[in-house]
Length: 281
Image 1 (cartoon, rainbow, N blue to C red):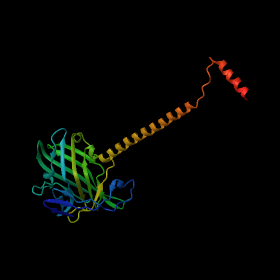
Image 2: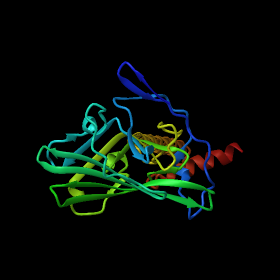
Image 3: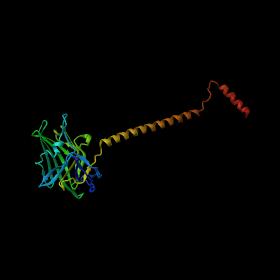
Image 4: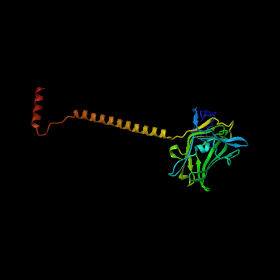
């Protein structure tokens, strides 16, 4: 449920418990987490795309940023979601199994006619017995004919849920869910922070319970693995040193019990001692 609190919009979400058994032909649900998430404060309400007067796509992000190569980062958050200056979504299309969200920003900095396009699809999987929607690609269109296309990886959820992820980005440090598919795309970096979207099954104009992405190799997990490896190396070295010291100590004790015979330079002294021992016996 979305509500306003002091000018900030808060989205409260419960995780969906309806997940199918994993099959080869169905989405990989092993990377989805079912958790109770706290409310996340977002600066603006979700963007809505209407079809026949009813919302068919809901989209929201705390931050939307672009960067072309080494140039200045562009923050499009307010342009995309501010209700005071709503972005143009008139070219967006919704059908039963396909949807296209197009946000037209006009001229931004040195970019002429900048638009961002999200392609979505809705597919029924017999193995799970339900519909799943997915974001198939994210495209940047600018300067009349230039286009940078990113294929979306693992951005999907049951049609009865919304999809939420802390970062949907082309950057490796954010797990790179957006993969460049054209030469132009390799020059761009795109990042959505606190990304949430829902399509095809929007009711009452608010997000349904969210399926949350769960990437395996986050920076925190990577640092934990590196720390564990360092600790294991230190432990292995300590055990090696303990074994080595025990081996040295054992060699010293063995040397103390070794018998050294008399020097051959004094054979007569040896013989006299032996004769004396015989006489005593």
